[in-house]
Length: 481
Image (cartoon, rainbow, N blue to C red):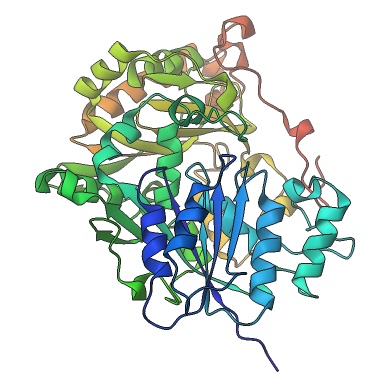
């Protein structure tokens, strides 16, 4: 007999946004659903689990229906425990739905990916380093026993919906704060604890198929309208619901059959902007987006100088632990000059670094740039996506010409009352000029844009050294010339 797969509802959102209140409403459902709950709290005492346990009705819960996970986060230190917990509940065969309340600092995308991880014969998931480094072999053996022969979670459960709860009263402060997770939430034992609050909020919003704008009663209607429009630009593909006290209809929370990994992974407004090259604007509230593109590399010194005038916190290492001090005056000046930039993201090309692209990530007052891996054009064709695939078609669209290939600046900006002209003009000034290129007179077309490492002394480069192609693990039969 084939066992029915219970649907898993994933609840994400910051501490205090209203996740537990929503979970309490689910626990008190009168639809007759038999529900199991996994509650994650990074604190030593799991208050949320205690709260839910007291609220659940007898018909919805039994003694095994609530699993508490504490002293860690389910998207990093407790990933193995989460797989085991969900597998155990699913294979009992008696629950209609499983609800996972992630901690406030969890990244829902990482949790969603766990459902697709496949386990190899040795007990470790293929190509999943974080689970290979599980606490010990015994922990992984317990996971395999809980899976009861299945090689992935999606064989025994289905991820039904990913819900992010947003605190409307705190949104504007959270998306612009320079704080990291450690200073904001007082958490010191979580992986990536020095990540910015704004970046995590943006990512929680972007990886959702339902966004609950909670505590709307604590803000004025116009402010709620602006917040909803901003959130819609961050994630145009999600359903958005305004609520008070997390009052969400249960048919939007349980057994929705709404989740689609491919769709959710492509929901982010910045990603849609890059792919569709479309300017979006809501005139009533001034929320808009645009894409900046260029096939000329940035001069590292001029780009770094621009970034200091663009954001309050700039990190050129791309490593959260190396975030620099907050420049409050600079941030306020930037908003006056460029507008209220909520999010910007994309890829950059630095002069002299023709093999590796830069990855630009920005939310609120925090911007980080690090190495994003090799440009596909720098790799041999046997490393490219197969012909005829959607990925290959996208790559071919990115190829400017036989010289530049896919090297480019491609950045999407999302915000309120954006001064597009000012942002584009500032970025244009960061581009290398032909006069700065050595021996450019003897080069044709765009050849002068390549090999510009000599335009500044390495000691003067504000960007730290990036890996080279020699450091890249291609993970297959790739042959370099």
